[in-house]
Image (cartoon, rainbow, N blue to C red):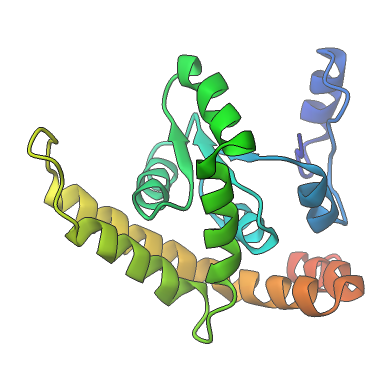
Length: 190
């Protein structure tokens, strides 16, 4: 678990027996490559970094507002699983680890960053395509919610890419420079 600058949380997690609790890290791509699935709660920059590294993403215990909206939009675009209950954790994570859903997410995430126009148009196109596909007649439709989810995902992806694009470039093109870019963006380059 990566806790950023929240050292109290790191210490509490370690006291609770979680051996792999980290504070601020300088090599997030390295940690992502050591993981099998990213479980997150907001759907922002960390999810985009996971997509770039081919790491399947699961949203769980999402924060109200943009966290839930992003989880819904990323799920509708086929880019992340939204786990809504503790009972769904085990089967969804198993599916992401070893099933076709995990393989599909890995390929879709990497493909987002290989397009000439970048991930924002690709995410938007995926979400629009899935929204245009007719739902089964038994499904409950919420077109207003879906439009809001698409708009929110596009906005979050656009804003995040102001940061994610340089990070992805630095990671994909020059891994040694990744930490320099990350520290610069966080103001740690002083």
